[in-house]
Length: 289
Image (cartoon, rainbow, N blue to C red; front, side, top):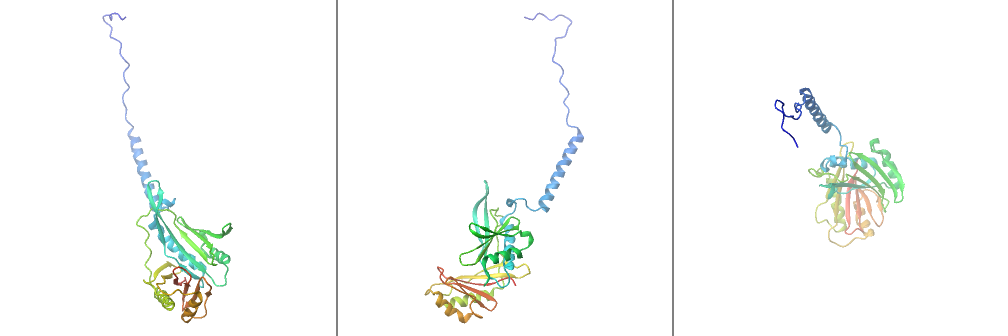
């Protein structure tokens, strides 16, 4: 129990609070300068540096890389190659991140050189590609495979198909869509379109619609081109009848004549007929010169 406070004495009190001090002005200035420096370095990195992961480059940005890659693959196969450039395939619905949808772009070209084995063709293509591709050919359980890196996260694969043709693929993997892939308009394909039309008329099955045109830029200028068309209604042509009716259109003897395809040249254009496909298809192509 406390007693009375003696007269003349002040009651005890808590110790005085220390004075509140702010940051030194020099520290505030240094922090602001450091933040400005980091912002400037970040802006320069985004502007000048290449992407460090695939997710930093959209499908719209990767599309020209894929197109250029297909042209370089065709050029590596050589001017005598029989090529078929397939239409580009864009698939949406993949996941770039758990919160962002994306898409993939794949382009395919099938290549055959008369008298050259597919393994030798794969080796030659790998050697002819620029060094930056780091192309290699290896024997796997699935057969001979070509692997290469076209840069900017575009993957190149090559393999032998069942009909002794080499299939070459350039693939973006899953990317943000951006503005989407926009293929370059195909020009200068009059000869290819005319050759496809002539073959279909000879087969008695003209296409319902005009041929689909596909192209890729060649490294030395110009472009590799393919015109695709599907045969319209009519009597199915057997391989023998196909060879008979198409021979008058050829410049020289047939290049390939087997049950799966009939190939001939109409001037500089190589025409490939797939008579047993369902429905039959016809393509006319010009490689890189």
